[in-house]
Length: 354
Image 1 (cartoon, rainbow, N blue to C red):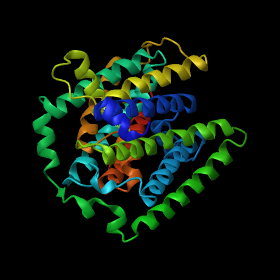
Image 2 (cartoon, one colour):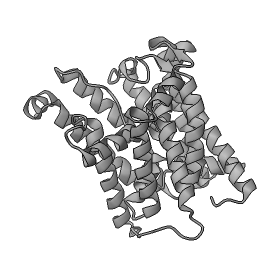
Image 3 (cartoon, rainbow, N blue to C red):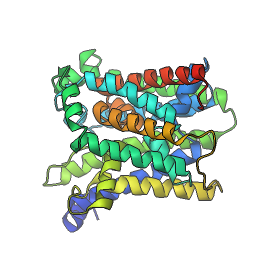
């Protein structure tokens, strides 16, 4: 049975949810087994080294770049129609709010994706932080924080289309993007082999994390090409997915219709749980004396506000948006990195727990 037949039988919303579930499961599984974490990579660079945690993150990110740019060259993805390119964008949102997201990531000991992975491993600290993150995202989208978000994103706007495409802005084009991605992946392999000379399974898992992002792009593009309905092409992003999941729990009547995000988050939790059980790493963890609740909650609020303003988290904007060379997505990733670095240095200076 081909995709057109599946869409006719089950409908585009159900197929999109199934695609999100498949992508989310393998992301959760691979991220759990590799301990894929942008926060850990930031801390290593702050310490003046490109160590093992950075190598895992960079290999996954560069694999994502190469796979997505290969999709573009083969005609399997048209990123110009995505939310990272087509609509009017904001430079003030990605820069200013990403700094908050980066600081919050340090305080909660993980980005949004990492919190979900840890929650499924029995970490109650991460679960509470993830819940507060979801509440803040929803408040920023349609709640009492929405006016603040709308005001800030209007400060420095840029037109959609070529104005948000780094490959067009620089004149490199699709071939240039593919070459840059290939160079990044080569460097990713180099750093990984240098820091993990005999851990090929870890390398495969890191690459798998990046490939799940490409899979999300490819699947939604294929569904959009076959469906008679308007389908948004997208990939992994946990800011909107957590808010939608929360809405479904609180009130199914007001929740958005089923789609990619509906399957993404629960499947990510399931994939991480399977990985934890397979590795015998599932363990209930609560707050200890050095794990201050207020520290986690403040960080979760900062991440929630930052994620909506910046257009996503380290995975949603950084990897998903960065892989199509969106200007605002790359600004988001760099600002998150900067904000996290500043927060890490402040924590060290003040003697706060990291």
